[in-house]
Image (cartoon, rainbow, N blue to C red; front, side, top):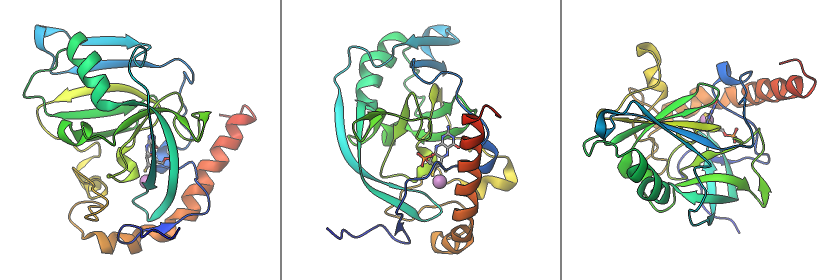
Amino acid sequence: MNRELPPGQRKSKTFPRFGLTPYARRFPRETSQIEIRITGALNGGRQEVSVPDALQGLPRSEQVSDFHCVTTWSQVALRWSGVRFSDLFEQVVQVQASPAPDARFVMLRGQDGYRSCLSLEDLLRDDVLLADRLNGEPLSIEHGAPLRLVAPAHYGYKNVKHLSRLEFRRDDQSPHPPLFRFLDHPRARVALEERGRWFPGWMLRYLYRPLIGVNAAIFARAMEDRRRGQV
Ligand SMILES: Nc1nc2c(c(=O)[nH]1)N[C@H]1C(S)=C(S)[C@@H](COP(=O)(O)O)O[C@H]1N2
Ligand SMILES: [Mo]
């Protein structure tokens, strides 16, 4: 089957461990127990609600979707399984933490300190999953154990791995310092090639493509070092 890929994307033979280089050597502390902290604009004045076993009791859901990294590599037909973000939001977050009704953005954070922000509207779409399994296996460390966001309509950088915190916010926020904000688009929709801000998507393709191999190698080396106990 030769499905068309979104603009500027190319099929990758492998599904590499990938991300922003500074995170290559940062790993999650906890890779099997799922715990999500809910912080930010919560009603009732609470600072934080911690939900251990956050997926427990929620309906499980499976989906096959493609994954698109902003640097232009895509991996097609990945079979994720987990729970829908919308189910967690309605049945757990709203009940236990009651975010303020005008907190329409969520900063998602991974155990490695990586962050990315999406609007609640984008997160509540039907194809947004919190996945703990991939292709019939428990999620590996490479791909985000113990839990990652899967939002296939948005570039990979919104798909936070090792998810550990949801911060509810009234405003959208870039996770990057001012000079690096071009790396992040508030919505990052793949179909519209919203790769970043300030520069058109097609231009960023050419900037990013040469970096793919080098970056994948840095991430693979870090994983190898971790296996040897050197990280
Ligand atoms: N916690 C965390 N999540 C992250 C990243 C990261 O470095 N740390 N990198 C992002 C980027 S840029 C991409 S392309 C995907 C890569 O996912 P993969 O390693 O499963 O291929 O994870 C995203 N989520
Ligand atoms: Mo990416």
